Length: 324
Image: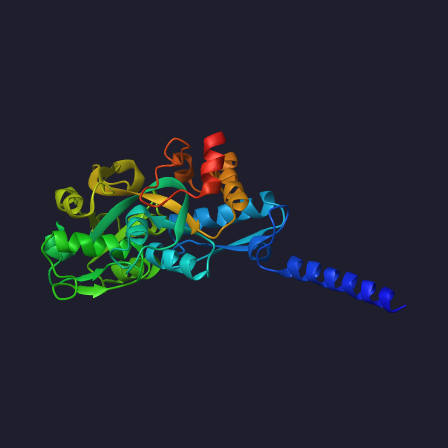
């Protein structure tokens, strides 16, 4: 009788252990769910491309990765997004490649190399520098003494804005009236005259910028920044590239010379390889659905996807891209 009780107790204990494992955060490789099957995507400002594509990507992942529910969150973007992934507050994040490079190498806003991995290099962001026509600003150097939005705190926009201001010979903390505002707040500030100029890094077109240029038309001007590219490249490398805002994007009189930076999708180095492979698979095999969300998705390519250095490509993404 006693032996039967002992055997029964052992079986119950084994069952309890099994049930506990089923509720745990990370389990074995077959059919188990990292983060209890709930993932979040850190995106960006609500009128930016990160937010639009992030919402669409979350829906696609929820429908096509069995056992997972994925949500998209509005954030300040790049630097904040990397910090969120490292802390475990977010699981997938959009980020500019310059901020991600700093994170991987322990530079800039990061005191040490961060434990991040890339799923893919995706589309490219374009730097927008826009001023009220009555501000007298036609170059970044002209911003001295002016009221300027450098973007959300800890964003990729703020990162590049501060670098551009320094490249133009300005001290961002002393030479301008700096305001760290989200894109919706910035657009409203330009409209009501409480701001003279803005920086924004985003895909084309960015909804908030379209709203601004449609509303104010000739009352705003785009500021070319190609003259500052050599200084940025000398200090930060080839992550910054010459490009242009085509005149058809925001109905400008001509193309505007600018600086472009690639975007990455990143995750924690702790994410299981099978899950990372599935996330990457959905990105490419449902790309046509993402294009319906925002046209920048058509510029995501398998050829460029592995080009994420110095951020290491996640083993799961590497597996998928190598077999795709």
